[in-house]
Amino acid sequence: MQNNPNNSNKRDPETAIRAKRTAELTGLSLSTIYRVIIGDPRISKETTDKVMMVYMELKDGEKQLIEAVKQLIPF
Image: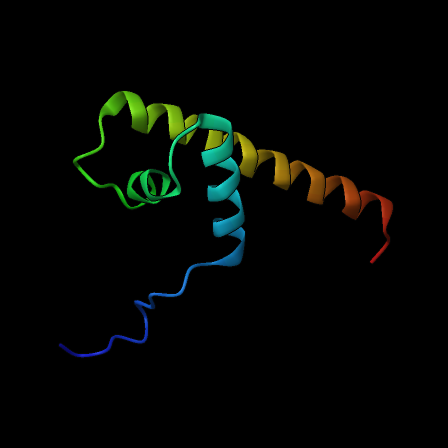
């Protein structure tokens, strides 16, 4: 098997933090959260919808916070 530099096994730190928080808020395991993120077909639609709703709310909240900070700090 060739090593593909574009397909790293390393996880993005922001994704890891968001995934951990999603697991805490949903009461699901971190493994389940990552399975949803990668689109594992073994995960039910109900679980996928629940996880993605929380995950995307966290992501959107981060974006709003970043925009608010940008307004406060002149660049």
